Image 1 (tube, rainbow, N blue to C red):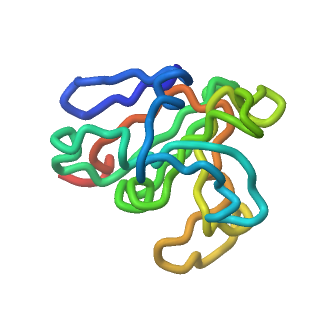
Image 2: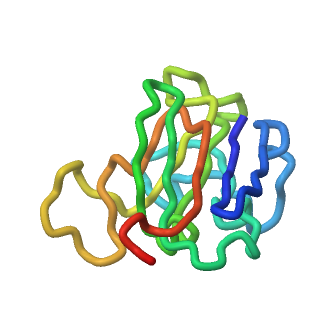
Image 3: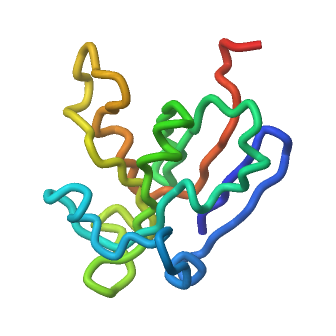
Length: 142
């Protein structure tokens, strides 16, 4: 189950079956079309969020079920590029492959790369075992 939480307290949940039922341009049948090194089926993250919940949103924090590992990124990048993977070869994404849900960002570079180009994140943005997404303002902003 994936829970998306907004700064105003609203939240929404998605199970794997709900994600699999999404069709049209929101669905990414084969993520290798975005990054030839990756495989799987997913849904564009931007299609899962409530647009009214994005008011003043500047960052997205992804939370893993493994030890609660978190990664924060600019909301604009996550909404434009992010994909929530839920299947591989027509089967549910296994825990061994980072499932049951995994956040995928194409165009990433090695972790801890210094001086990242604008709009590029490191591989830590490809979060395994995704369970929660928090959308909100940067802690350093008013």
